Image 1 (cartoon, protein in one colour):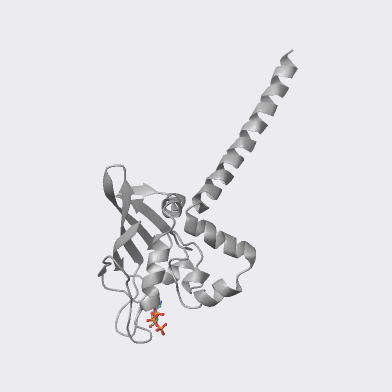
Image 2 (cartoon, protein in one colour; image 1 turned 120 degrees about the vertical axis):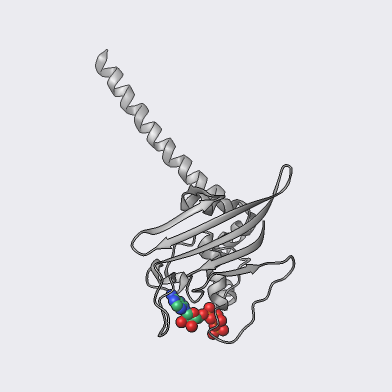
Length: 196
Ligand code: ATP
């Protein structure tokens, strides 16, 4: 998967709409301290379905909404749109993934204009071997965290990189459904036994 474009509105320090085109090759973000470099990477992870406010350096998820400055009032919502390109059966396919959060209303996700669940977005990126926890997104402190990681954590990183992280989620879902079906079958057996 290739990320081609990022559009931010009201996300952290990006109060005015900002449009970032990501060209092929290595992308570096440079600028003075506090200009918003880490906020950009967080916007990317957030749109991929990050659900830990702490890892977005906030106390609650609404902290990603522009909080206001001495000269500008706070915003009521934040929205980030990400344009991704994937290899499809008939060549490259583009998808736009949008996450929006409104004060008091939580987050909503869309893929190509369709309302979807957070899980759909997380699976889309997990299947493409990327995502909010992808080792491809290297933020500050991350290198130290990789070195200090326990074997089980390293295995999770490798699974994420290999694109099989989504399979674990699907397996858990399938197991839950299987257990519910087994319970239904057991109940059915009881009812049949009562009738004979
Ligand atoms: P450094 O080089 O020091 O790591 P950086 O370029 O990575 O800095 P960021 O950490 O991305 O900078 O941005 C920090 C700035 O974002 C701070 O000025 C902070 O006030 C601002 N900021 C963070 N959250 C919000 C918010 N919700 N509303 C407004 N501004 C915010």
